[in-house]
Length: 197
Image (cartoon, rainbow, N blue to C red; front, side, top):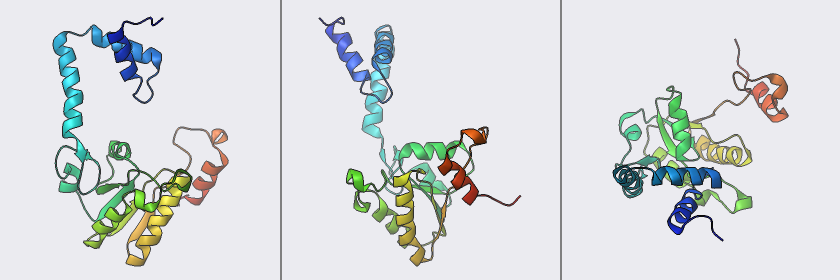
């Protein structure tokens, strides 16, 4: 026997499709929506539909935008490109307020185990951007996992013969953490990326 009436059950089911939303959280969200005024519920639903209708990929970098070319590509220094795996990584980089260049979103990383080859992600588009000239540096900001490292090395091997400076984000011990809790790979990477004081 289903404990929820059908409209509530369907709403809970829709919320559980979101990442990180379990059954209890979905139930709380569903009850919150039911307790909204009809006007607030309509505005909530409309914002979901508008986002779906209006948001697409920037034709230059592949990040989310509601224009042909995103504001970052339109206004920032195009001589430095930061390569990331997915749009949420752009947001993470932007929170630091340090990077003044542009981005290139790959929408994945090379993963032979998952059948993802260089042709399945936006490497060709990156090479096309660079072929237009003016790019001095490409910063590889893919995740420090096996796939991210393999992708960074592959792209680097394509760009170095073109005379493009290729750098990698430093990896190591996070600020505020204790050395005893760091794993061997993190400590090894921190030693390799050490800087002179």
